[in-house]
Length: 598
Image 1 (cartoon, rainbow, N blue to C red):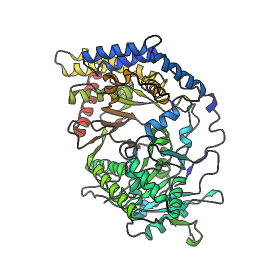
Image 2 (cartoon, rainbow, N blue to C red):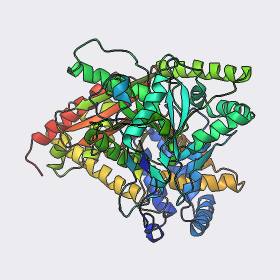
Image 3 (cartoon, rainbow, N blue to C red):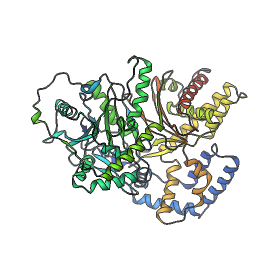
Image 4 (cartoon, one colour):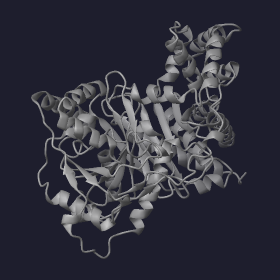
């Protein structure tokens, strides 16, 4: 259960050599912006938006002035975006972390069941290797925590380069424990950790008041509840203990049991779907939503029936750095089990400290409010995990095509078949080649993808024409992906100019209230590729009430993907969309097979 939270010396020595995130030429950004809007707007809307864009970008106009101010900011900082992004995307966001922001990750099913199996494995994590990419996110993963504050939260990180904390927190039956896992500067043994966890589960037979469920509430409500808790000195100490812990380990109670054959395909489908929801939000107060601390950057969640996974708070970083660490965890769990029991004197174990809270009537009311909300969220989220196993990345690569682009165009086709239009689409593109880089938006809905989707549904096109249009869509996706990860997308650039205006008290230009900008900002298909060497799968909730949230992994012989929607939205259908994605992959494969490889 112990990560190497500080890397070897020299871990960040290359940081100073990394380039800074560029500020693209304004004209290039506006040209890319207009082109991306074409499939999203009506002809009348597009003509009006084009005029707004031309006025915004005219020589000596407001766009140029804001862009010059952005360049000035870029000259003074390692990254003109990093601080803004942490607040704009995360800390200023007032909706609950769960579903709206925190992703979850499920490991392959492990061969254990019951409490003894839940507490026996060891999770050891070390930061990733020596790629010439910004590694700052890796230093934020452990010993960190989001802390609720009115209007804007703060993000606590353990000071880099100082000795790591000695403790983790373990949550079982809603009771939180501080558990020392380092002694005299060294990590304790695997057997000692096992004995500590065994003491916890043996001495906590009944569920206690779920303080952790408060972390599932909206941020302003949680900030008020947090402040009330912290008025008591013992509670404040507990909050600091959770905040500074290396990470959290949540040992879950059983959920709904599967009555069929545990080796069947139906069971594996149940396992992926049900436990994905358990990892994402805990399935409500009747199950494990109170057995969490959703502000903790990393929560390792260990359930019955072979479940291991995580829920992670997004402020620290994107999925790939987290999955890099978790791949190590997964491999360690697969290759290291306790075979021979050591003889351990329990009186010599490092201390285990239960965190007892002084709970007022106001805090009980806060818990009730949070419980009501999380129970509704658990009912409202539809999440399904799919394994498409007809082909995978190897087949697509054999045609010298991108497995990522292939899946993106399949999603565009599926959405068009279901809704009759192309959706404003977010695909996460990493910009970690730049110092403090995070993401840029890859706008996967393009003129070419829209034309291909229409052709697939119009009988006047033959398959040769459809194939050519598909290849054009794939080539266009490749082009915009390269630009985005090179810092030459349009989303972050236009956001930067908007934030410059807001910070400097400049009246927001009409450009930002135009239908082109507002419609493109309403993401209806939010997507991310997160690949893993260990077959772990990441998933997240929809980013808007009428949005599909899709995370996928192109593996050599299959595509794994998850699809989330809100049940209370009549405009979306997660089950049908997932089926159409699979069908679209098959139809696109058929177009390739109809002609020899490129």
